[in-house]
Image (cartoon, rainbow, N blue to C red; front, side):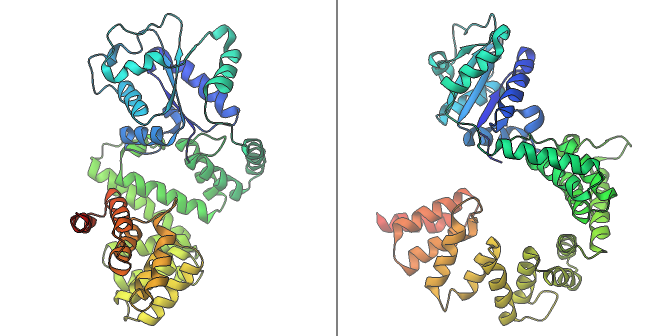
Length: 407
């Protein structure tokens, strides 16, 4: 979920006000990031900066002495949040608590704060403070879907109380991913998934498996989901136990024919190089038109992994998933037809080189089409730069070649 408002605060003295601001602005329909509940990733620090980059507004809670640690510690996280927000040109709203004063000798990087149009946080008139921030300081506006979503959440909770496994699982998804009015809460998400599975939801079993699998790769997530770390296991053994629990959930759901679980077991088998078994899992899931599995089956057919190579069938499957809008299949189908239909391939690459689901490899492939197909080096450079930014290291040589050609 893309947040609108980031609340930056120091826990010593600022946590209570930050929590109140978070609760009030969420209730008003804003999408607010508040790290006690909102942070989902184990990569805590970098995630904070990513969220700031996406937000329009930053509410900076300033208790007495709230900037003192920023003076001499360049790694202080409140300082880094402020510096990043200033660098990104965000609308920073200082919220100054009683007795707060700006230090006399702020670092150069923080001096612009003094000129920001802030507000005094008078708790006796808190409603008026919130209204002033919303009407006079914020750039963003409340999400119009807030009222409709609150009603949906109430209906789901009512259905869950009556034993609806589907409602429990859907609430788990909403708590895990966050929404317009619901702040991510990993512990609550896990509880809903567990209840949904106990009431027979195969989707919830797969979601639980996914949680355990991600925790096995990143132990910092364990605390967020509320797992107990007692038992004396080493980190390595604990990871193995988490992965084993993930597989148990996948196997339970796959045993009842649930396509996403079959696909997950296919991933596991492929990773362990049990390729024939992986192909069987993918094929079973693909028969149910589960698009990731259709794409995976096509990949194995294309490369002769776990089955005989069949390029014609691979192309058919890629096209099936591509026509249904699956981004990876769109890219793979384009790569199969590029030699005989470069223009169509270019159109397909363009579909998945931009937007929320953009694929870095599609950016790179599109750059190659611009460079070698259309001799359009300016657009090629743009594509290569984006591909390199998102981790396609081979784009570096192409980028250098294009720039040298233009020079």
